[in-house]
Amino acid sequence: NILGIEPSKNVSMEANKKGINTICDFFSEQLADQIVKENGEADAILAANVLCHIPDINDLVKGMKKLIKNTGVIIFEDPYLGDIVKKISYDQIYDEHVFLFSALSVSYLFNSHDIELIDLYPQKTHGGSMRYVLANKGSYKPSERVKEIIKTEKLLGLDDVDKLKKFANKVKKSKDDLISLLKRLKNEGNTIAAYAATSKSTTIFNYCNIDKNLIDYICDTTPIKQGKLSPGMHIPIVSPEEFKKNPPDYAFLLAWNHADEILSKEKDFIKSGGRWITHVPEVKIL
Image (tube, rainbow, N blue to C red; front, side, top):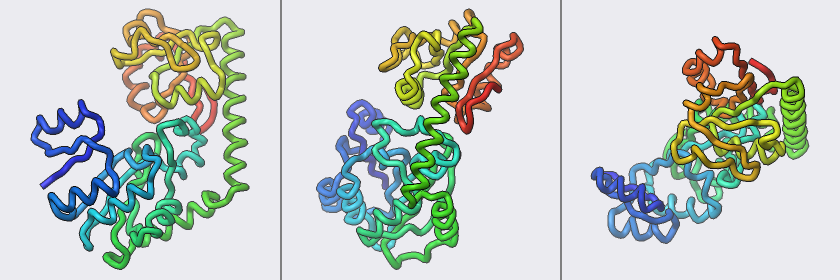
């Protein structure tokens, strides 16, 4: 007995076509009241890469509180602040990611609504995500993993403004190192392409002010992106066929979280003498 909530009309239509009963709306406290009235309370609320996109997070949690049974659970996962700080992966910071969660922040948020964090599961998705399991206070005994990860977060300084300022300085250094490397390679007469026109790449190019003077083109497999320009910096986006036909001397690996998969797929580029550039966890040539 599953109910989907999806605000995109085209996606909710596809879900309903496939037999998944789906409401086309944004989840809220008001919608939760309506769902309980029409369907009853839920055993579980599941969300992957959703909560970090929602500005009115307290309204959402109020809705979850109303929707779950006393013994119900909330399970969600999103990019993890701890990994972002450790890896200096500042490309996760962009407009759609309204929040970047940690165990500390999730505990604080949900505790204010009488819901507690009972377990966590680190994930590899997006270069480092965390899956959080929550329930009404007193319903379940929290896992020891909760204490362990919160202790680690405090050592990392996720609750310390001064330590987070050090992270900001590391981000600035990463930016300077990347620009310096790209300029040096260009001055030596090399061609440089970027690989994957991701949301992350938009953050990198605009924050670092990297345009087509440094990057000749971006290769991307998504047909709808090909023939267009990157947001802000207006770097041309081309197909993988163009990448193979006109290989650069260096390729900047933007989708670093899929490095193993991409490097395995692009063995011919490496065999022909091509080199990869990465910026996570440090700026270097692979």
